[in-house]
Image 1 (cartoon, rainbow, N blue to C red):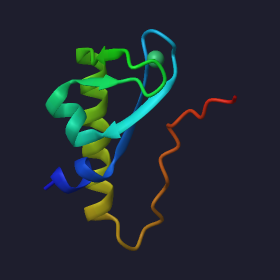
Image 2: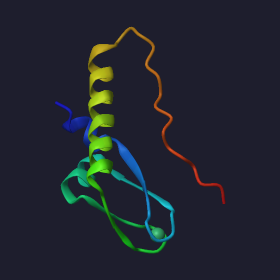
Image 3: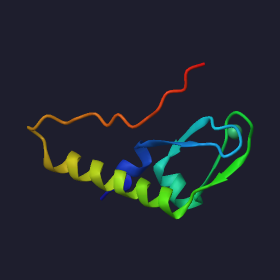
Image 4: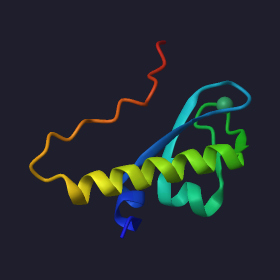
Length: 84
Ligand SMILES: [Zn+2]
């Protein structure tokens, strides 16, 4: 089950208006397919490409989490921190 992963992962997406990144639980993103910017409150809809990318990330993490217990688990470093 990847639903557990989906509820834990906070997935960041850029606002189409102000380009600020807002994170939202992956499970909510897949359900709503949109995210409300925390800076300007603009609602950004996920493109098919973004949704696909999100699902791939979740699958990857679900597989890694269940398969490699003794292996070294790499932290995904995909989040881009904005520098103020
Ligand atoms: Zn914004």
